[in-house]
Image (cartoon, rainbow, N blue to C red; front, side):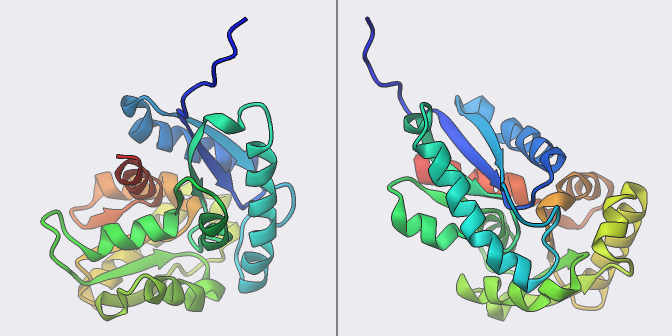
Length: 232
């Protein structure tokens, strides 16, 4: 009987929002970046909390749900195959705690986005902003930037006109309103790159990146790049 332990080949993507469809969408995007490097992506969804994190209270409460979901998976039969973890909400709930507790890289999509936005392809610092649909998380997003030391490059957050759950139900309206927020961030705030700040906004972030000349920072691919760097 083969008793060998398989080499770690899995990136565990945890969705702090409880919407399983969002998890599937983000896993598909992550696989595009990671599968060519021999890594498979397994998605897990928080067992409790809102379908979309839209305020500081739900962001804070989701930290425990994220840690429980990750620890439950790691204690299971495939836990030994996990090479890294991606926390797939822009506020990175639970990331710092898990990073302290685990001996594998734990990367947040907020963390990945900030590092991708703050430096251009040559490594030079640049000004960057965010476009999002969650006004109540504006302070949390500013803190995220400051935690990684890039507050001097940050031009601020630009918001959609409509509420996040309204836009979640209307992808075309979400695209149009985020596109306007991106335009304001670049023309009024002079941002050289704009993060589309939200895991559930990932599909729209991809569409915006293809439809505009602005350097759009997509959270999932940005986090995947940090994973690859950490594992290399």
